Length: 277
Ligand code: KIV
Image 1: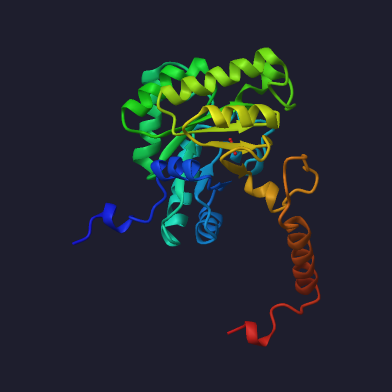
Image 2 (image 1 turned 90 degrees about the horizontal axis):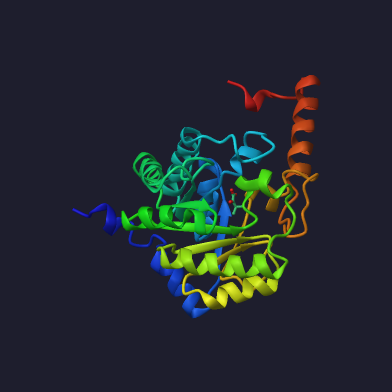
C-alpha cells in the first residue's frame, strides 16, 4: 500500500526551491484563492501557489489586506488544496498569515501557522516583515513548518508606509532590508518575497542569500517571480501597475461573453432546443 508521501513524490518541495536557485533555474509563483484557478495553475506547471491575503482586495473587494481573518484564509486555502489535488498535485501551496495572526507573540504565530497547516493541508506559510517577526519565523520553522518571508513593500503595513510606492530606495532602508533578509534566512525561512524594491537591491539580496528570492516588482535578478493571478489575467483593467505583465485581457473576454448571454436571454435565443430536455 502506498503512503501519501510516496504518492506525492513529485510534489514541489522547499529543498527543490533551494536546489533550483543553486542551478540558476527560475521559480514560477502565482496566487490563487479558489479550486478552479488552483487546478489550472497546477496543470500549467506553476511551482508554488501562494494563497495571498491579496484575496482581501481582489476576492473580497476590500481596500487593504488588513480585514482578512484566519478563518477566511483557511476557507480559501482548503479550496486551493483541493484544486491542486484534482490536478497533478505537484504545486507547493503557501498560505499567507493574515494581519495580526503572527504579530502578538511567537507562540501565537506558531498556533496560527499550525491551524493553517492542520486545517487546510497547505505546505508552508508566509508572513510579512523583517527583524520584528524573526522570533516568530524561528518558532514556526523550529516546529517543522516551512516559512516564506516577505520584505520591501509589505501591504499589511500600508498605514505605516502611507503609500504603495517603491520601498528601500534610500541607503538606510536598503541596508536594513539586506540585514533583515539575512536574519530571516538564519531563522529558517526557505524563501523571501521581495516586493517593489529597486532591481539593484533585489540583485544584492539574491546574491547574499542561500535561499531563493521571489520578486514582485523587484526586477529580473530574483530567483523566482510572483504575480497576483487577477492582475496577470487582466481581470481589472483599471489596475495596471508597471510591474504587472498582462497575459490575457479577461475583463474584455468576460464582459463580452456576459453581454452576449444577457442579449441571448432577452431575445429568447437561449436556451434553444438542443440546450433543453
Ligand atoms: O498577498 C499576496 O498576494 C502577496 C503577493 C503579492 C506576494 O503577498
